[in-house]
Image 1 (tube, one colour):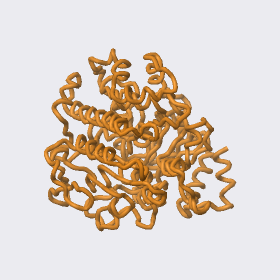
Image 2 (cartoon, helix red, strand yellow):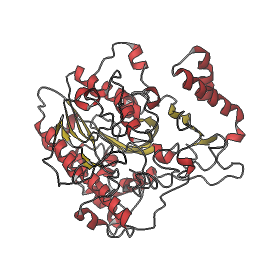
Image 3 (cartoon, helix red, strand yellow):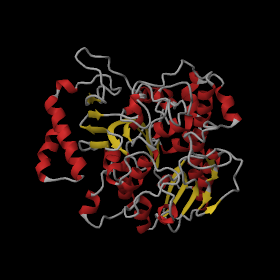
Image 4 (tube, one colour):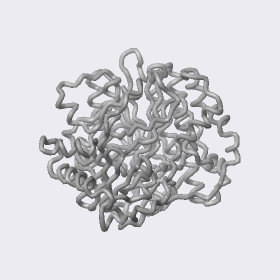
Length: 499
């Protein structure tokens, strides 16, 4: 999903009141980084490790490939089962299908309902690729599950997740539910965008038929969020729940599997080194958060969720080396008490096959090389000015949503429409103007360097002005590429980069 595809970020084209309400009632992350593709992001989320440390930094796992998320890497549900959790996944897996050892029910999940591969048709649940004929991909655990064929996938997955919530025995075990919606990924190439007529009818103001279908898919996803929050309320467990919502990567505006999604004004898109593919929407809500109703500028990475969840669940690490093997850090102290995060170093990717590197440290973003021969490296997805007829009532629509009504009794303050308006303004990105001393970034010819805290749209490349700093980063990356672990001789280099 593109960062410009929900109304929380300031766009009035597609109104998403339930998603927005979740953010306003909780915490909105402005700098939440993921990997740039589906498989690497899911692997990073479930392992707490960057994709470069588990061999999944190049492309996604395609249908029929004899590989998957390495089975010797422990994942989140396996940790949680050790301390008594019931663990369930509903939706897309996309971390290996070639043998049973790869699939969710052999990786710590008590159940899985959904598809194992990259994508499905939203109504008949089949998958079609260039290498294979159309085949059915929807399962309940390890059995083919055809009972819901003909129904809309987003609603089906929502319903299956609500079933798990309703049937969970709260007296014996805590619950971990991972709902990985198919939405809003493209479907098969013959029908990449599919939506219900009732959702399409809500957005007739969008003239482009492709964008209108995509927007209807977003509306269905928004409905799903409201229904899940309501199910947790009906179960009576919201007071002991943490809800996290995020997109696994930026939207693909054009090219392969494109949907017309928009990350504007951020640069680039899915499957690339730019902020448009890496910096997405992320929200958290919980009554345990003492500080809520704000926009966080802390730099968060998708690998942070595993250690964060384990800390809140009371997991005890067997050794210091176990937690040090993770790339993520628990952000719970930051969320609960606004404690500053340590300076972050994030290796977005070092892909020696495709030949590109994307790296973040202390506000600086280094890019060397790119994807798709640079075809998608510009600022894509600048949508026509098509405002929803209901946009003038935005605050009221959000405050009348299911999510708002359910979560508002837990609020830390009595929010007014002006509070919503103020929070919304803080979520948007403001692009830096082109500065006279910067140079055009041509990453296939030379490395580029941006300060993404002041220049989030990656307009001003200043690599030529900071050769010493660029050299430090390149030495650090060379070390990471060769060793993938810390060594005393490089600690001074890391210290210089961070400070």
